[in-house]
Length: 313
Ligand SMILES: [Zn+2]
Image 1 (cartoon, rainbow, N blue to C red):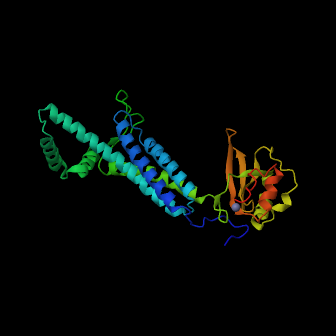
Image 2 (image 1 turned 60 degrees about the horizontal axis):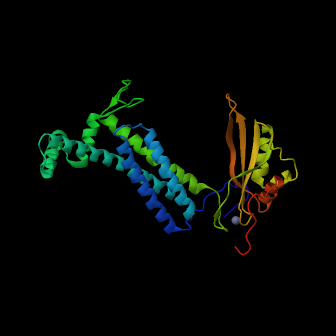
């Protein structure tokens, strides 16, 4: 039930499940490719924490597009799916590292005269079993944990400004943090995409918020009260004062482009920090407006900026 003055809550619907499935497959492919690319580029350069963050952001971008096109309003589902896709992407990176190690070991054996692939595989298995009591990928993980990772600003060979080396449990924690960065970023972006205001009757996402009014920060209780009680119509016809410099309170409106009835208001306090950069602090987010009020407010600043409804649509 939609109640005026309440904060928007996604209804949990999914308009296009098949589109979502396609989008998830695309996100998974991107995740696996990024994992492979990270290990490939990692032969020369690997920036710890940063590479996983970039990968997580890119996987999240595909997830955002999938959520957008499939009109997913189920935040938990969207975030969970992208979390696991992110984990698989990071797993692909570790599998890539394992394959590169195998390649190096085979090359080394070939140089020592062991050229038969079967013999190479047996020798490698034997090495892992003797030293790490496990073969295959499990053996690689134990070897990697024993070798550890050196935390440094740069992994280039020339600079020796290396920090501590994490081995054993430390390495596992490091790998866990990196995996969580990839998965967490992808999940967070998907969550945000599914949380955006949606017009259920029109089955459409709402466009970006349009600033319609600025006021002295001292008026925060008054404006919050008007927003929460559906009483913003009192502002219609007042000078919007949008050129007011920070510190200022800003009211902005999201209005459905199709019906122009579903609307939400945001109240943001904009202040300047020490470097004179504006900082936005949300005071109220996605508060449902009475039908018609959003349109009246948007028109106050020369709107409606949304396109007029298409006849017959
Ligand atoms: Zn609508």
